[in-house]
Amino acid sequence: MSSAQSSIALTRLFYPSNNTQYVQSLTSGPSESAALSPVSKNRQIFVLISSFLTIVVTIGLNQAYGVFQAYYISSTQTLLTSTDSPALVAFVGTFAYGLTWSGSIFINPLLTRMSLPQLRKLCILGVLLMSLGFGLASIATTVWQLLLTQGLLYGAGSSLLYFPILSSAPEYFDERRGSAMGFILSGSGIGGLIFSPLVRALLSHIGPRWTLRVLSLIVLVVSLPIAVSASPSRFLGRRTTHVNLKMATKPTFLLSVCAGFLQAGGNGLPLTFLAEYSVALGFTAAFGANLLAVNNAVNAFGRILTGWIGDRVGRQNTLCSMCLFCVAAVAGLWLGSVGEGGRKSLWLAFVVTYGMARGGYNTLFPTTIAEVFGLQAYASVNGFIYFIRGLGTMFGSPVGGKILGESNLGN
Image (cartoon, rainbow, N blue to C red):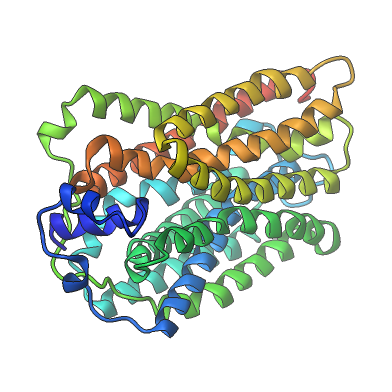
């Protein structure tokens, strides 16, 4: 796909389809209709559902790891022989989450060189790795074995499924692309909403080993049909996937990379420790899992709402506001809940407020990249910054786990 074609596609993703003059002012290539192959309504519906389910079983499952975190370090867990390090246990989940994002820098360049059969084989490999990761985790007895299975195998597999499916999804929706992508991206919150109480219930009734085996089966059953029928890109040619030296030396790019790393380092901390901290405040483990589900549900709503607001008051303005809301929620509500015996009402307010603000940030982040760096550079810059965000995710939770492990409330 040429740069001009990529620019047109991405512009129409982030701006109203009737804003023709704006689109043409940013691109000089042919119209999108001339560059796209025809698509049927049935194929559009399939892409919509398959992309949504891909988000559910990749990002959604990642966002439910907090339930595993709380269980793995509890005194009643029966999987591991020792759980002395909350930081290392936290790294299992963030390693998987980080690999899901950071795989972009390796996978995106491959996609431009693959035929449709090769792309589907790549997706199938991803599904098998995800399923195998959970399956092998069910026979683990140490944290490092979980790192290799529930962390490495699942994380690498989810990246191999996520990027091939999601990279072409926007191309299948011309007139209602914004609404379609809003529905697809809400799968992360819906997935967390489904899997958080489900995992907690399974852990309570059938134990950790069979819980992991059930998840292995769910991933296989849900994802394999998606992989074997993955849709190709509608564009012809190749898109630019590498950041050139001129772009890499711009102060704006360097600051954005640093900001992406630091934001990702803190973004996932509440999800990882939400269920565990809820138990420390005196809630039951089941209620902690339900709070994580509530956070994910609000997150899904926040993605749609802030996207709508961003179209009207400015995406960068809304993105900055969401960042400030995240900071205020952590500093005012989460920190405020730490006290003699804990303040449960502030913690409940934090669960809702942070879920809303975090969802808004993740929705508006890609659109802001397009506005700041230009649509022609979107694919390369977005892929690189998501790689950096993946590294930031791997960095954040172990640091949080170390802090939590040394706190009186955490102990």
